[in-house]
Image 1: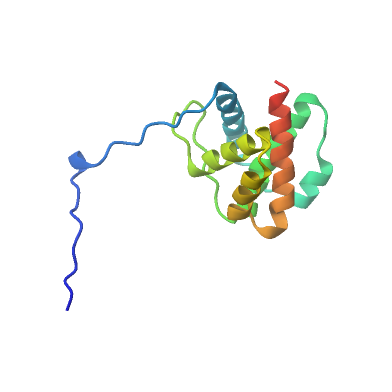
Image 2: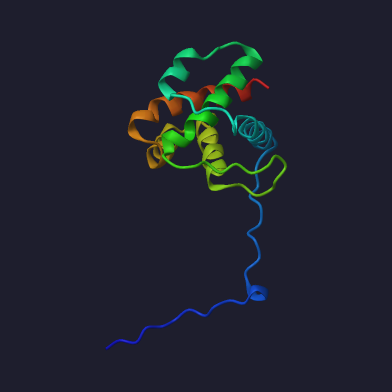
Length: 146
């Protein structure tokens, strides 16, 4: 019979230090801060049906940016079928969800549809992929106009 090797249990003092904060551009930091602020404001808001929300969106100026971001924040948990983690504005660490959104926005900005398609297919329910892609595209466009 084969013996099982056990992993040593680390004492609290021996625990590895937190991973260093990822390097993100000032533009990504601005977008992330905006998303985090919106997430804080939307935390108590009712969830929104993704299809209806996309049909009702305003396409003008600052209202458009706020509307697209708020819609993404409200609809993303249903689209990924789990709670989305948002850290407080100013936090250096990124949650997996925040990093995923920044990677999506970067793929759009760099005109890399293959990466964007992979990212969306890896997390978003099939019925919601088109709408989440639309929202991310509009958010990317709004932030590029800053």
